[in-house]
Amino acid sequence: MQMKPVARIKKRQSEKQDPFLVFINEARAWLKVEWPKVAAGVVALMLAGSFFVDRFTGVDKTDWRGTADIVSAYQQAAFGDPKGAIKEMDRIRTEYDGIAERLAILGKGDLMMEFGDSVDQSGTRPASYYFEIWIDDFDGPPMDLFHAYLGFAAALRQQNQPRRSGILLEKYAESGRAESGWAPIALEQAALSFIDADEFDRAKKVLDRLLREFPKSAESQRSGVLMNELNGALMAASG
Image (cartoon, rainbow, N blue to C red; front, side):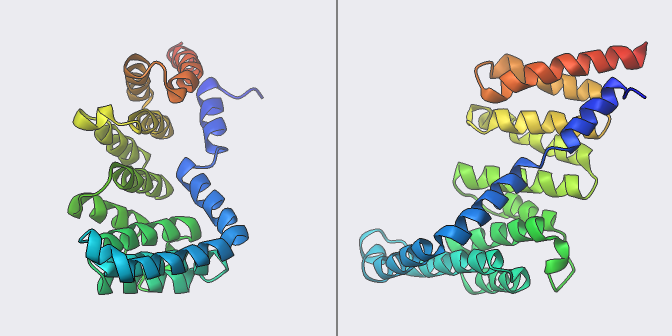
């Protein structure tokens, strides 16, 4: 039996791995190969922080120590101990303030997305919680903010809440963030989330915006094909 157009689109998208998880998997594979260099770099950063950073920049050297601990926790997870890595992220976010605390919260969300919520022995919060509190409670570099939004959206999809995922990513692309280079990615992923939620008209509006506001982006080029398929699916459904 030939699959209906809407089902075909959803099946094709479901076979694609979430881009956030792709990034995490690639980073994990790289770390397995390059961990000696990472370890050497961490040591160098710790020494630099101890002797120079706090004196010349005013940045607390504890941030550097906390960041080094975070790298070690990711390494611990990559080598087969995600539960221990989660505990280490919890320790870092309670013992440090500032940059290290923020990165540890994102790190815990990353690890729970990669290895499943069950790796958190406390078992009280899903992965989405840690991305959400980062968005609500912290200011930081644009890349970290996008990291938190994309992680939150991916976690919501894992929790079978694609509509919330789409709304969140649309929110990210609004107002001042529309100038960000990350906005086209957010809009593309929002459209895919709305397709997963069977909200095809809303997905079409998001794709229209992506094509209109970011016509030269790679996401816009890909979305042109998706838009054609979505239009065909909508016509088939209405017919």
